[in-house]
Image (cartoon, helix red, strand yellow):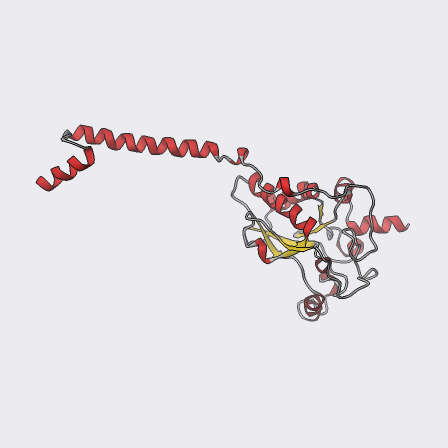
Length: 250
């Protein structure tokens, strides 16, 4: 009993041995904790969150000029009729994707600098719009000529329409991403968000109109950075990149 009373003195301070006082103190501490949690939730509510990337995503050039021919162009058009001129093409502005808002480690993947900044900003906005519960996952970014060739002779053997030819892949342009969500395939809500919003960061779903138009099967997970206003133009006209490109040749 004496040990119990001593512990109670230490907890309640001085000679407060009234058990009701102890209950009041405990209740007060609990209420203070609840108040702290409530204030914290208000301060860090997603609707008030500050985008840590947006201020860094600065467009260096904004114009209607589109260059679909040069290997280092952000709008380089690629298919079996329009391969890279340089099979070993590698741009000089490669950077690891600096984002803390993907489900996996974005820094393990490389993109061209303009593209990774845009993606990092888009990843934050995706996370924020889904109330911190969903994060984009990067399944694939850059793939070399050698890796693409291996895919053609293994996974896509006899099914060439499922893979781009080794010298025609948008992944080799260091501008394309295959995206999942929370480490799994895109669910409908995530896909719709990308469909409605990715163009704001100049990403486009290149393969959406199937083999007859795009030369490949539909890939809802695929997003390719197009730069300038072209991605928004394609979104508004409901065109795929190939559909738009070949309409220019008519």
